[in-house]
Length: 181
Picture (spheres, rainbow, N blue to C red):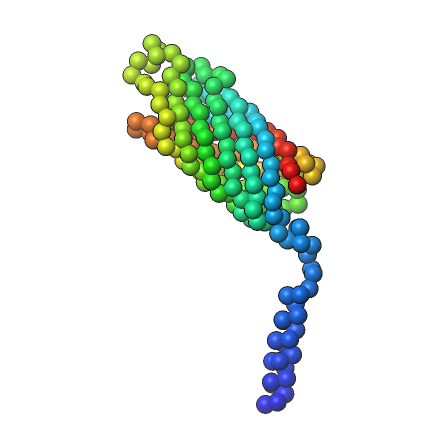
């Protein structure tokens, strides 16, 4: 009986000491406070017409913990609008990050506002410009090239605007960001 108590006590002591060990450097373990701001080029399949619309995007990410952060992005799809319909979105929300070496693979869920702009009302007499509630589900891959330079290899978003019967553009973005420490 005494032998079993000594074994259990020794194991408990060993396990309690394990928490004081420094097997991983603190910045790598926590990754607190990574903030990056960037921009990119976007292309989207809009619900109107057959042609893709194109434009620019801006984004800001703040990684609070190793796997969790928040993202805000703005898509201004107004540069190339063959069917005279432009779409803008202003979204923010949480993101989950999986890190592997210099890669950051992430998934995100964002909410905000989506705007449909009819640039030629004579061509689309039944459509009306408007801003409505919007949400987005997406993800992508970032590569850390330098401690301060992030390349956004791909970012994809399925968006839904509460416009009339609903708009569902799919937006893809490539770009780069500057990371602050």
